Image (cartoon, rainbow, N blue to C red; front, side, top):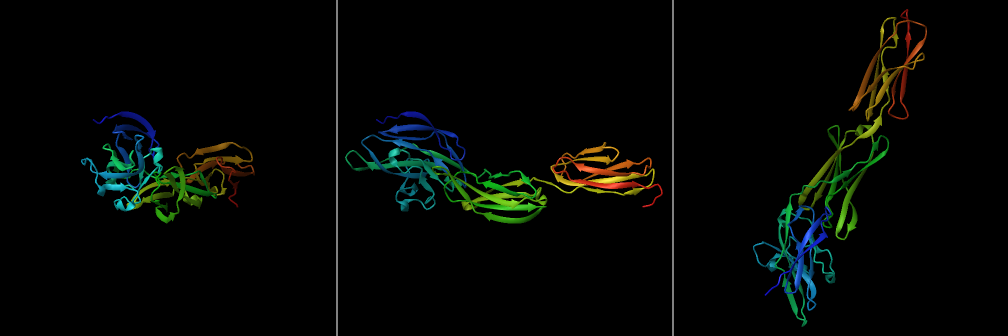
Length: 357
């Protein structure tokens, strides 16, 4: 009579999220295997790790392992269902070069596999067979009846685009990291720059690969450019395309810190009793704080404007009533206090009682 034993273990196996998965151990006739207790969820274009560990009696020496994928209704998968085998010619065409062992040393009793370049058709049940030598030195194999189940859905994860602070006149860079930590076919990363509603360029960049842990890699691309005021509010899209034309993308809007020269306009010669109208214009990001002052007789601030939620041209007008003539020249100044150095623009307004210039 077969004796079954159940043991609960906890291991970290999810290469994309680092989350823990509960494994359940089942033993039969001296052969034990641990598989995830629940269905393993994965996404097309990425990879999936099927965590697995095994043990055997001391009278059995493992030599190799074979993995199958077949319909759950089958009690035992057939030779035509092989997805991993020491002899690659026995592997199904659709799985060849896509499945590998996380640990090839069988003495470590690790039977975990990674399946790369997933498609939704990879959903199904996966079965393991151990081949080796028995106590008498004869070839023997054992196929575990318990299986692992994988559910591969459409890709929903998006790339991660890192945007540092950008300042006009300085070099800027964006980094796009592809979702997943797979070791299979490297994706293609394409950058698209849209400015003023018009696509400026499309560029496919080479990929930087960084090894994280055994069997897991981080793949990213960096776009370097000169930050311009005109690039403020530009949309930059990173598109990641995997095998089988599975694509995901992320778009970011650039915020470039800049400030243009302050401009003050208006009539400079007026008559007694007339109103002096001056307009101060400033284009900047983030929004500026503008103040008006009159000199030399006073440093009083006539008007302060907080241009919150401002983006683009900012026009601030101010009217000054000159009531008497004392032969002096007045200088009205519009200042931007947010930025350093302060950009200062001043014009002299002369009161002319005779209307002469």
